[in-house]
Amino acid sequence: MTSYEQERLSALKQLNLLDTPPSESFDRITRMASQLFDLPIAAVSLTDSDRQWFKSRVGVAHTEIPRFKACCGEVADTSGMIVINDLLASPHYSDSTLAHSGIRFYAGAPLVTRDGYTLGAMCVLGTEPRAITDSERSALRDLASMVMGQIEMQHAYGRVDPLTGLGNRSQFLEDLDDRGRDTPGRPVFAFFTDLVDMSQMISIQRVMGPAFLDKLVRSAASHLQRSLPDGVRLYSVSPCQFVHVIEATDENEAVRLAAAWRAALASLAPDDSASMMMRPAIGVASFRLGERLAEDALRIAHSACQDARHDETGVGLYSSEIDALHQRRFLLLADFRTALTQAGQLRLDYQPRVDMKTGSCVGAEALIRWEHPLLGNISPVEFIPLVEQTRLARPLTSWVIATAVSQAAHWQAMGLTLCISINVTALNLEETDFADTLIAALAECNLPASAIELELTESALISNSPAASSQLAALQAAGISIAIDDFGTGYSSLSYLQKISAQVVKIDRSFITSLGQRRRSQTLVKSMVNMAHDLGYSVVAEGIEETEVYDLLKTLGCDEAQGYLLSKPLRVDDFERWLAEH
Image 1 (cartoon, rainbow, N blue to C red):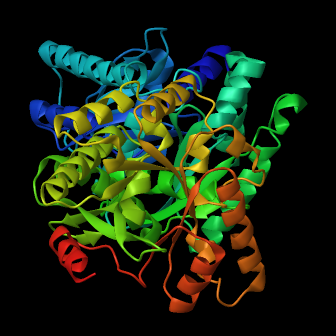
Image 2: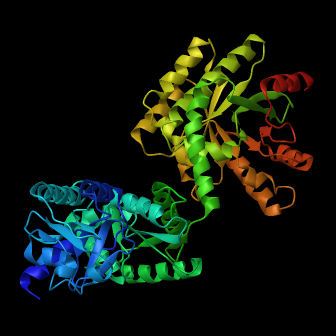
Image 3: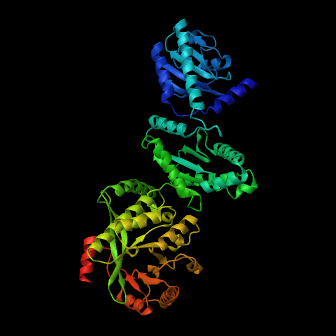
C-alpha cells in the first residue's frame, strides 16, 4: 500500500462516513443526478481499502461492492473523472461485478478533499451504453462538488467534536433519524456514558488543569470506540459524555455489556493521581428505531445515566416510572409559575395552636395548598422542595407573606387576636430586603409585629451567612417572633442555641408521636422542655394525635399544642367556625 493510499484511507476514516446510516442531505443530490442524466442509478461511492461503500444510492439495493475492478476505485486511484460508455466493450471491466449485474454505462467524478485526497466518486450508471456530453461532464463535477461541500459542512460546522474527532450531538440526532427511516421498528439500545460527574469534572480541572481532562476524554473515546462492535459509531454529545447505539439480545445482555465497558473505562485515568476521581456511569435505554424522536432517545439514555450515578454498580437501566416522576416534577415547576399569578390555585390553610394552660386558641400555622387544575391536590411535601431549589422560592414566600398578613388584618378587624406562623427557608434570609418587605407589609395593614411569627429550621437559623444574620437581626429588632421548627432533628450539638436569638421552640413530631408508648421519648421531651424554658424559649409540641399524649405534654410543662387531636389544617371559613365552637 502506498503512503498516499494510507493517508487517503486515514482521511476517509476521520470523516466518520463509512457505515453510517443513509442521509437525506446526500440522497437529494443522488436523486438530482439520476433525474439530470435520465439514468436509473446514481450513487455517492466511498472507496475503502477493499470495497466501494455507498453513502447514498438511487436505483440499487445493495450498499457496497468489492473494490476490485470497481470503476469508482479507478476514480480514487487516478483522482480524475472516469467515463466508460460500455462496460462490456471494456477489456478491463467486461468481467467486473458491475458488468455482471447488468450495468453498461458508468460516469464518475472524484470526491476530493481540500487536502487533495480522493474519497470516492459521485457516479451515475445505466443499463444501456451511452456517451456523455461536455455539459454533462461539467454537471457531474458540480454534483461531486456539492457532495464534498456537504461532507465538509457536516464535518466542519456543528457535526464533529473538535477534541475527539467524533460525531457530535447534532450528528447523532441526524444519524438516528436516518436509521429510523431506513430500518423502522428495529429494537436497539442506546448507551449513554458519562466519564465523571459535574463536581468531579470541576475538581479535575481545578487540580490537574483542562489539558489533563482533554487527555482523559481522548483516551476514553479511543478506548471505547475500539471496544465497540464493528460498524457501531461513537458520538461525543457533551464534555466527558458519549453515546452509541447497538443491538443486543435483551436488557440483561445490554447491562452486562455496559458493566464491562464501565469497568474498562474506570481504569483509564492517564495519571494515578486522578484515578480516584474517575467514576464513569453508563445508562442503558431500549427503544425501537423510528418510534421515538432522536432527541427523546438521547434524553432517556441520559436519564438512565443519571440514575446510574446513584447505583453502586455505576450502570443504570432506563425506568419509565422514574422518568415519569422527573417529568411530573418538571411539569409541576412549569405550572407553579402560573399558579402564583392565577387566582384560585394556591391557598393557605390554617392549623390551630392552643395554649395548654387555658385551652384557648392563640394562633395558627399557615400551610400552603395547591389545587392544580388538571392534577388536583398537590401535596406540599412534593412541590415545596422543588420550588425551594429554583428562583420561584422568593415569589412563593412573597405570596405567602402577603396572603397571611392580609388574613391577619381581616381577623384583627373581626376582633380576633391571633398570631399566624409562616414557614420560611434559609434562602429567604439571603434576600437583602426580606425583613424590610415583611415589616412594610405589617405596617401597611396596621398590624403589630406579634401578628406574624416566622418558623425556620435549625439549619437555616445557624447559617454563617452575613446576609442571613443581618436579616434575623432586623426581624428581631422589629419584634417579630422567631420559632425553631422541627427542633431536635437537625444537630447533635445544642451549642447553637447559644448563638441564635429565637423565642419559640417547636418540638418535632417524630418525638411526639411515640410519646405515650416510649419512656425514652418521654425523657427526651422532658429534657427538651426544661432546657428550652431555662433558655427562655416558649415550647410548642406539634403532631399531637392522642389525648394521652396531650395530657402528658401538659404535665411536662409544654406551653402550646398543635396537631390533629385539636384540628387538622382548615380552610379559612372552616377555621373561623372551629374558633367559634371552641
